[in-house]
Image 1 (cartoon, one colour):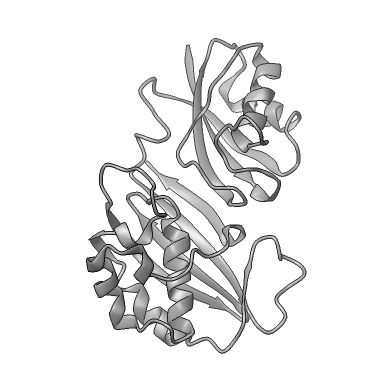
Image 2 (cartoon, helix red, strand yellow; image 1 turned 90 degrees about the vertical axis):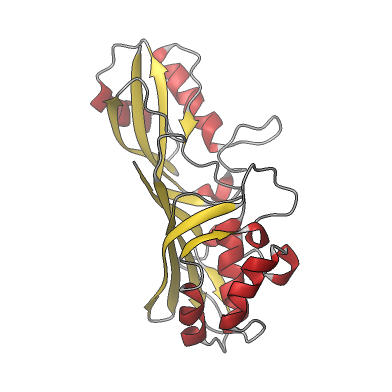
Length: 244
């Protein structure tokens, strides 16, 4: 058996997230069906992140075990001939037998994309959340530093999501500006369900003056989801990279 690692890029607009579902098309299902056609095997792929419906990825990492004799580096070419154009295999390689896309990961990088203006954008509307001005970007930048470090992020997870611990470590959190485009970039050892989207929504509330930057530590300590901002729209979120 060979353990094959793939790096995937996909536009999540037409999919009900990564994970297989009984009544909707997902990225996992489409990839596994392509692998079945290619190898003749019933293969289950393991992903580093179960991205939500509408969320995109540039660096989703997956792995699977196979008896196929296809050269590891050829999977990207063979699969891309079978996959729809909104899912691409960027690279493929053989890895150690004990490599696990989820449990071997040391950290992840996400980017939340916004366009600030009265009318949004036509080109890129599938990838940018539209935020109307005014927006205090300096206050948003000040707020980012409060996320950095090891904290209990219970206030920044979707209500009712089961997890053993809500403590996570954020390595870096910052805003990047490019004209009317604004990006919230965050790196951490792991993220709770909807955590990045709630962090982004909280920053939007800061920019709108609904939350003050120095309230972020209080929100973290409260562990109360109701005190944080909105869950920002899914289509603005991109899984950029997974670290091993």
